[in-house]
Length: 326
Ligand code: ADP
Image: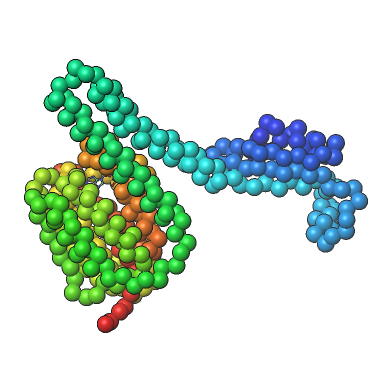
């Protein structure tokens, strides 16, 4: 009771010891940082126990201190509770993200029903409704991606992927889309083969390039680099993450406004945004970096983010390299 000062526990203990009852207590709170939660199952010892070795051992252990009256099994539920709460937050966030464009569409539909609306007003209402439905579709695509990543987490990575080909393909696609933005691409000459899923890896490259485009300044350069390195060239914290002898390092650098240091650890949290309005205006869902991090971890890699306010940001993905010669 000193350790677990739960107000209901004395009553449960008394019922077990004095009335021979079995009790279950679903929520015992242990203050501290973080607060921990336990469930407890309490049961009296039978007066004539079935003779089992464990019970005998327990009886022996208590010989000197008194009679064994009952057993309480405590289960630490902190982790499960945290996961459940996060699930609730997630549903609340998703609902909110869908509710905002939906409200806007509903509003414009009402406007369109009004016969006095000008042709110009009608055109602009249609345009906004189009943007909002695109936003909802992006959000649903990203949610489906996250759901499929949760499912594939345990799957073995068994396809050999040429990562430089993936990068080249995504950069070409981006160049089509952003003709006004100079993109410099430096690819290493060595083969960059990794074990993994080509569609997921392409999504990592696509999301990072997309962010560089969205958050970089107009007409500013985006620099994309791919290199191979021996693990010994990494700092010790990073090196211990890899059991390969070499890694590939892929980085995307933009010349945007940069990100303040206090935001960096949270950027990969689902729906976390530094500037909510800016993200929404540019069609962001707040899930892109969460997807990147999830895929990189599934590929036994690491994601690093460095940034300086006013200068830009660099997102770096490091993955174990497979030694492979044609
Ligand atoms: P979003 O869909 O909002 O872009 P992301 O998960 O891709 O969601 O990114 C989360 C947040 O991280 C963004 O809202 C933005 O505030 C910040 N961010 C991501 N990439 C960059 C970048 N290259 N430069 C500045 N901020 C960025």
